[in-house]
Amino acid sequence: MEFLLLIADAPDGEAGGDLDAGRWVDDLESRGAHLYGNRTRPGAEATVVKVRGGEVVTATGVLHEGHDWIAGFDVIECDSLDDAIQIAAAHPMARAGQIEIRPVWPFDDE
Image (tube, rainbow, N blue to C red):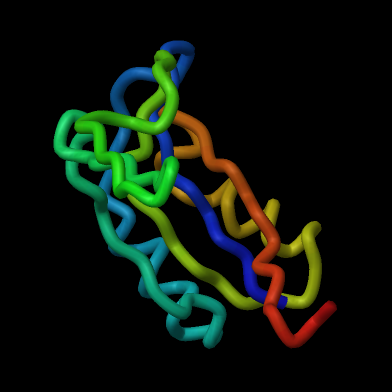
């Protein structure tokens, strides 16, 4: 199963600690569980796109205002949600921020 991990800041995150996820990625790659990941630019550089009345409407900024911001993402492959939770819990940002796990829902799986 594929899972999207949204790596986010959180106001109640623990300060300090090594936030370099390099060892985490290396471990997952050695097990064939890491498919892709990267950082994202700050929310101030985001663009929201929607079509209303046949017109493309854009806005600068994040989709929703909140205290948390997306710092990056990873796509992993593992056997179950329990495995994805263990993988996410090992990420350094699980302590400093938070990680949202979303199962990938392939179009051919309907």
